[in-house]
Length: 480
Image (cartoon, rainbow, N blue to C red; front, side, top):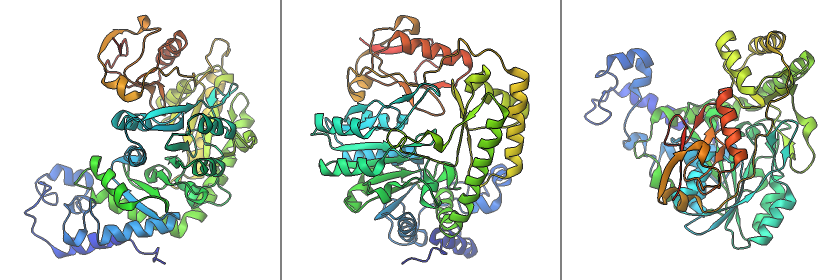
């Protein structure tokens, strides 16, 4: 058993700072001396530990000492066979999962409401997606989890698939029956991968949905910087006992930087220690705050802050109690409109707004007084801006028609056409609202009038649209 009171990378950096080493290596700012404005902005303590890999500080590409110890402590804290510290965000963790299990021509079973990093990985490795189109809650306009029957059907129809990927949870906090999905995948000789970008706290809270590692998944991408308190862009990749650690390390090293940031790594180390020692206590308070906010927002009228009452034992097998997801259409406003009003008029920055919902992300740094401010602002917005909701779109998810694999379509010969003239053609790039980063269109999918209506509507309402080469999204690349 490791000592969870320890933070080996942090401790090594503290020792290094006291050594007063003369730097004739990179980075060129030389502990901040070469860039005084940067040192003044970030602080001398910060820039003094922005250093290069060296023997006393280990090397992220091939850790043998303090980074290796930090990974072992992380694996123990999360109940994994091994953990990798990741400095390319959870995008890097997700892509490493896919690239570790899939090669060109392999099939992977996954829901279509995945983050773009999953489909990016398919572009990189040439694997072929077998989509389990999720059920949709038509009142909320959101996609749900994967139904057990749909996963079983996909496995039966594609017995040559190599892996099944599941969101645990979705952006809105909805969980599939991951235990059952793992069991089905393993019985069919497939790996089970979990995108747990929004589920770090599952590992440390009481009465939380089951974690991927407890469910027996083979790999899980965990976004420590989202709810775990580490610095932005820091993440963990957890693996189960069936995976070859050395092979996964090689896959990670294909794309991850050889100059791992000690700021990011030490933040993972310190945050893991904090969660291991205090996570249960902290997240019980987060859940209490979320439950209180849900009650208060629902009491306003017009809004629907949804929670565990949605659970149906299948497509909504469980719900993340920390997620403060609020449906706004019944007050006549798209979620993105409420998002913009909160920021512009109330100085409140929430996580995202889409065409029907908003999400306020609650975690270890939140306090009750800020929640009171959010609830008051939402009540005032309803009073000031409520209007007739007729004419608002509700559908957040449109079933795709997949014509080509993402890799084939992305690298195929293409041409740019006006968006309004693209119906019936096959897209060769991504179009999405970010956040949440779930593609509306991905490479290889047919463009339909319904999708074009959705994109136009989202643009008018003010969603932040990303993906295409054309930043204005007036044109789109399609296959010749």
